[in-house]
Image (cartoon, rainbow over all chains, first blue to last red; front, side):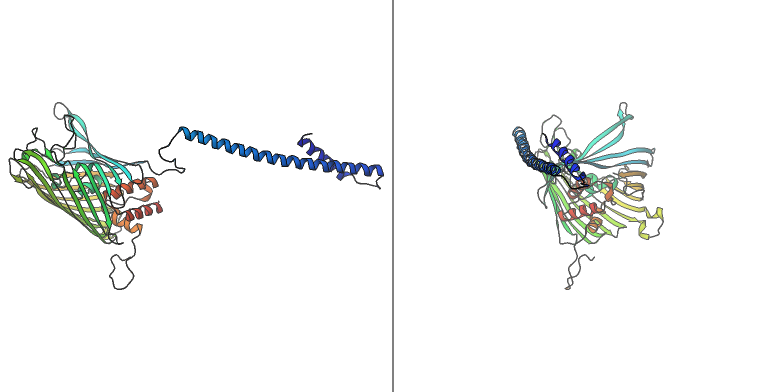
Length: 436
Length: 72
């Protein structure tokens, strides 16, 4: 008899027993029958208890066999697949790809020229963080140009230039290795004033006598000075450096190529065009007095060969002094002094140099509580450059920035220019700049 | 909070909070980015990028990151 049937029989027996209400004294036969039923039900209960105990034992045995089977399956799987690193049990927050960058559209009207609209720049920055120590980052400039197809000035073309592409590896809290095509830490403009970060449509004139980027490797970092937010920042690098655009590698002044020499030649061979790397670096000091009141000073430079002439290697070097001052969250002034020196085989040693200073004031500082006024910022800049060969330029820029959002700004600027070769006309520029 | 308080026997200058470090460092070069603009994982990537680009000491970068997460 199975367990279910035993349960039913017991239930019926209990019901029958409970329904038996003697209306009169039981006879001996009836009493014997009741005693017999009670004994049978007690036997049934004992049998059920034995069955339950056996079931519990069987269940334990089954669990043990299942556990062994699972372990055996895992071991078999592990024998076949050997992970290089242990498989993490929780969701990773590494291997993250993020894209940021900026885009500018502008209208320019220069004296003596037709005005025109332009997609000034689309500059995406790709960031891939592989771990807490490794970051790959790359930035590009994509621009439209006239004259993509012959004849001249017909159609349009798109230029794509890589502005930087580096692998950053944090060795420890104080040193990060940066290698690849780097933004060079000569001054701070290249690293901190691109695109939407620049409150005016044009770069300062003297930045043209410096290389903005170069192929090489760098060690950089910072060290806090106390708990006040002050810090010393440092960067040291080796890069291929400038080279000569002359087909024979000669050191004519006009052949100085600051932006090339990135390691792969036009004939496919590798190596620097001048044979030895240039070395450079920047040392900076940042001192905050309180939030939005701070001073930063920096000294940077680079030195190395740029061409070979019959008289030996020709040297190129540059020194930059940079400074930035914030007085409240409304006012800032910053600038750079740039001096370079290049040995040439036709013009002797030339010394291109220049400087720029820019000041800006947010009208919200007047606390007028007017919505449009509070979103305006006045900007002024003076920049000048001398190329070391007799050509000089200087420019006064007056501009106003309207912040439609925190990273969307409308910049309007008037530039009053003068140059020794009349190559720099006055112009008005309106630019919509968006950082994303 | 006073930064660089005089050494006259009073308590030393307090450690800057993440909000203060955010104000000091993150608005030097550009207008402020708001914490909800990016996810937690994206902020980690962006702070890595900014720590290298702006040469931030590790403790400051971590404090700014923590501030961004607390204000998402």
